[in-house]
Length: 252
Length: 202
Image (cartoon, rainbow over all chains, first blue to last red; front, side):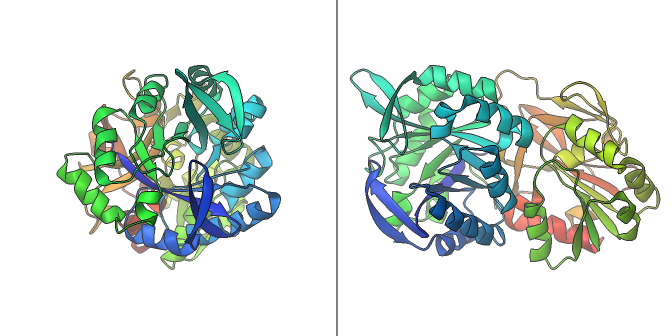
């Protein structure tokens, strides 16, 4: 049976790892290459790297990070941030990424999703979706939560899947870094509106939050950062806790 | 020396990194004439069956790979590389495969399944093969695919994996020198690396 995935997210700024609250107030959380090696030794299921600035300069830095991590961490690696052309995707795959996450460019250039999924396969095209709950609905945001969009969430999901998206990575900015639990309602809306795997991010503060999300939604994987950065929780303990709570998790 | 075939689709760096990690000597092969010069062949690949097969045909790899298999030397196909070993593929039309292992490659059909089948899943042993020596059969491996290798030839199936129903996740030919693995050993941490080490020792 297919297992539920645990996916630490490493946010990158210059060549450092950072973590913020609600996409703001970022704090330095260490060296991403060292952190990746630790996560690797703890048998996490995948790693996601997101360059939150995505300037040309830092993208070059990211290439070095992925290159170095992919030489010793034998698990799927996803990289996002500034992914806006077939050329960028090709470069990232060549240095060792297995998947790329496209967020802002998915709104700016639909053809990129179609083209890149045809060339590289849907399995390596992950669509990042950032939302905030406002009044009575989910509102989409791009550019790291800075630009509000008019597109409806469910329309966006359907369109991206049609164009060849292989996976969604969703995040409720309001929950991000707050460590009060995932937005289960959002997860349920997304999983019921798409047939591709869904990874949820934003809100994990303790192991109960992970169990709650797995028990009450059809999410394929959960991404997290703060829970492992701040405090003494680690993926091995998370795995034990999930197993004890009968969540189907990878055997190593 | 392991020759890693570059059929123009997908990404070879993951496979190459894993081979370097286990200390295997390997070269990326772009020229089909070099196929006969290596001891073992590795056929990696992600992407579409048709695109990859068209590329292997256009570059002149097909007969070289078949001849290599006839000599009894070992071939390992991974993911799409595994599927290409089949007789026929049904991704973007009907395409003739390498035909080294009986079977056809078809889309997962159940509407209740999320496609691609992406993530970690287990294997169940059907037939022994040294490629699985000392591999923990209880472990999970990393899969990512929408099509699967369908064969009724039970003797050619080494392991099954359950996704809605059971499908063959490792297959081999009758002579046991051509092996296909649907999951990515190079992305499956310790137990996956063990499989690559076994391939090296064959």
